[in-house]
Image 1: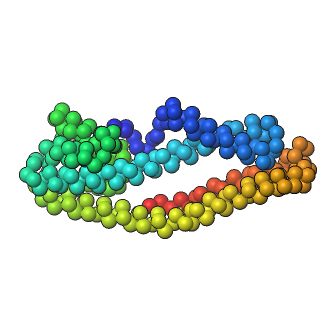
Image 2: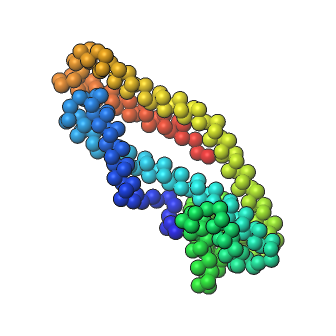
Image 3: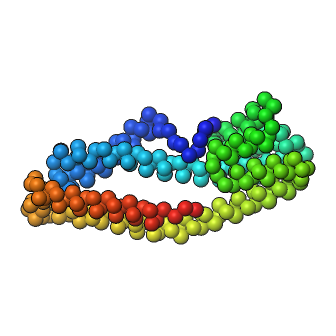
Length: 247
C-alpha cells in the first residue's frame, strides 16, 4: 500500500541502477564537450537532476498502472454486486477475481485488501474509498469515491452507477491510449533530434580529431563548449516539455 502516489521512493537496487545510468550519460557529455576528467566531475551534480526526472517518470507510470487496474477492480466489484453481495463484501469477492488477473503484489490487490481491512475495523467504506482517491490523486478514483459515497447514502442504484463509472473510465483510458499512440512517432523524432548533436560531435571526434582540438584544454575552448552544452541542455529540456503531453 502506497502512502502517496505522487511520491516515489527508490529501492537500493533502483538507486544504484539510476545513478549508474546517470553517470554514464554525464560521463559521455563530459568526454564529448571537455575531454578531461575535470569536465566530467564538473557535470557530475547533474545526476541529481536525472534522478529527479526519473522519479517523475516512474510516478506517472505507476499512476497510469493503478488507473488501469482500478478499472478492472470496479468491473469485478460490479460483478460481485450483481451476484447479490453487499457493498462491503463485494470488495472481498473483487479481490478474489483480481487475483486471477494480476500477480499478488499488484497495486489494486494491495489497495482493495487494505480497504477491506479498514472496513473490518469499522471504518466507513466511503471514507476508505476517499482515502484511496486522496492518496492516488487520480481523477477517476476521486470521482468514483464521491459518486459511490452519494449513492450509498441516498440509496442509489450502486450496480448501475459502478457499471457506468467503469464504462467511463474504460473510454477515457482508450482515448488516452489513442493519444499516446499518435504522439509516439513524434516522441521518437524528438529523441532522434536530441541525439543528433551528440552524434555529430562524436563523429567529428573520431573521424577528424584535429578539427576540434582548438576547443579543448584551453580557456576559450572550454568557454565555447560550456555555452554549447548549456544551449544543448536547454534545448533538451524544451523538447521534453513540448512532447510531454498530459493525457
